[in-house]
Image (tube, rainbow, N blue to C red; front, side, top):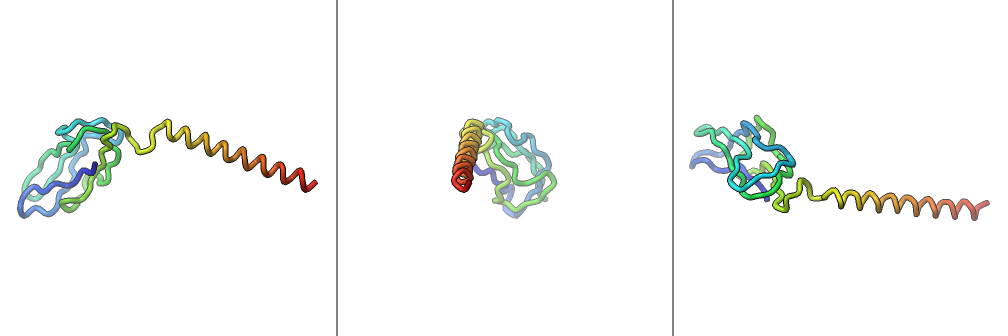
Length: 114
């Protein structure tokens, strides 16, 4: 789920991230404060739009962005990244298997040449 810079008033077109209360990988609950913003009208805390894990922070503290800009991503499945550790391990195993197969083919080619 995308977390966007909210509109804090009719004439407010941008906001500055003052502080992130959560870091990537932290679990968040719906309506829990995840960051603070400052606009020309107000300083306020912004709650999480859903339960999940903060997957990515796209805007650093001190940066000013327009209303509607995606500032963070929350993974509602409860994982810190799209690729879970088991998936990463499985991919590593597949890569190792591919390397072994290439080595076997190269060995067969070398044997035929001699």
